[in-house]
Every structure is written in structure tokens, then in C-alpha cells.
Image 1 (cartoon, helix red, strand yellow):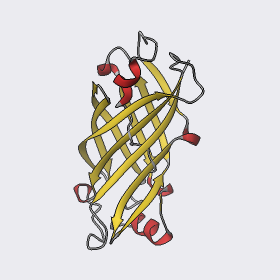
Image 2 (cartoon, rainbow, N blue to C red; image 1 turned 60 degrees about the horizontal axis):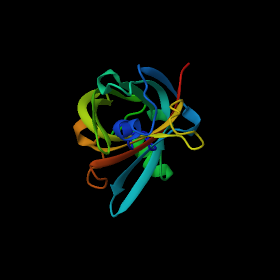
Image 3 (cartoon, rainbow, N blue to C red; image 1 turned 30 degrees about the vertical axis):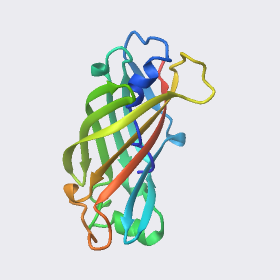
Image 4 (cartoon, rainbow, N blue to C red; image 1 turned 90 degrees about the vertical axis):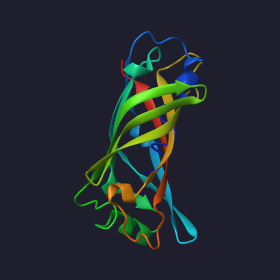
Length: 192
């Protein structure tokens, strides 16, 4: 999960001020080539970092009403890479993510609460067929090279963490830590 959830919508409030009023919800398409989900966990005394591709994303953003904003994302577990081959193999195995049986991780937002720093994004995360409520921190920015007020191309940074055990992905718990930290960078463009 190579930086997909680093701070997805926490910047809705932060970026709303410098961007021109939106007036209505807008659908956005994910730029998959430049979007990345990153994750990290401990393996003994070391930190292992990895990435996971985004398979698909459905995003509607309303800059005037966070209640009308909705995000749904699917990650490709089979394409995940974790630091070194042994870690990748273990992460995809039946004891952890079980990629053969559960090839996707999904997230769907249920509520977005803007604040002075961005937004808190509540949603349902499904890993290994187990769905749990989670909250992530998000920030929204104009992409580099865009003009002030231009909302056609945006970057969302989402961060958060989760417990592997809460989703039944607790293999090798004697060696690998339970906490997984996520950082997501999603670059999106408004669909015209």
C-alpha cells in the first residue's frame, strides 16, 4: 500500500480556502501512474516499507459540502511489494494478506469531517474479507504547476494506521509488528 492513504481528504478544508468555490460535487479520476500507496511495519528491530498499486478508485468531491464527498478505492494485493522478496512472499501468504483468496483491499468513505488542518475521513476498510471501521487523516492540494483556484488536478495525501490482527492478518506475529502505517498519495483529475 505505497502511500495511498497518507492524507486523502484531510485537506478538503485546508485547500477549500485557496481554491475557487466549487458550487457542486465533481467526479474525479485517479491518475494511476502517479498515485502510490505506501505502508510500513516492523520486522524485529527493522522497519519494512512497501507499496501496493491502486486497482480502481471512484471519487466525488464537493468543496461546499463535505457530506456530498465520497471516496471508494480498491488496492491490488497481488501487486504488492514489501522491501525484500522474503517480506513480500510472507505478506502475500495465507498467514497475512492471503493474496490468492483475497486479491483486493477496499476502502469506502462513510463521513468526512473538515477541520483547520484538512479532514478526518471515516470509512469501512475490508482486508481478507473482514470489514472494520477506520479513520484516516487527509489533506488536499493543487498539483504542482496548476494555478491558484484551479481544481482540475489535485493531489490527496492520506495517512493512518491499522492493526493487522483486527483483519485476521496476524501471521508471524512473533517477528512482525501488528501496527501497519499507511501513507497514500493520490493524484486525481476532474472528469469533464
